[in-house]
Image (tube, rainbow, N blue to C red):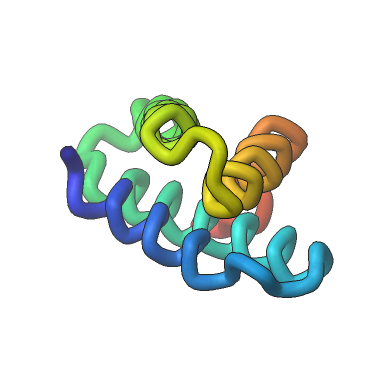
Length: 97
């Protein structure tokens, strides 16, 4: 798995048990950081948006995988919240190039 995606997962797991407002902010920041990282590493300027979209898909897929692995646990419930935040986030929430 991509280290950038694993870093995203670690960041969102770190806020487990925090108030919803803090979880939402942390997920959006972690997602934005990951997207910016993917954009930065894409050499073709015309594909930077595609790279950010790929990042979001990979983050989402990784969260879904982790929900399945941790089914029935409080961590799975936390990750379901994370998933809903990813799904509701607009494109490139805070990015600026």
